[in-house]
Image (cartoon, rainbow, N blue to C red; front, side, top):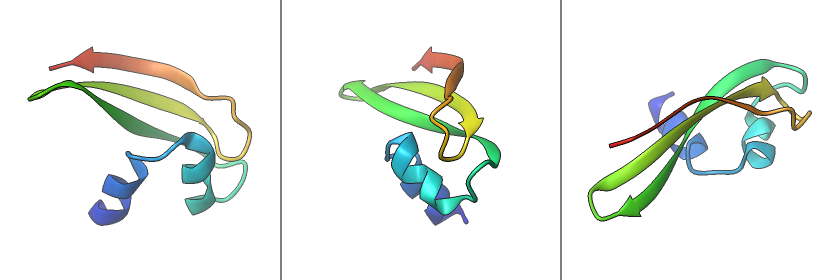
Length: 61
């Protein structure tokens, strides 16, 4: 499952939703590399296939 989760953190919500049943509510974390050794992480929650994603947390390290 960790390999699947790692893959899902790198794709867009519309693509990621294919791994879930439409209508399922779930969250995933998106990573954006902003500089060597520095990334920002955004956690999105919403319903698969609906596109109603809401950012619930965002931090950089």
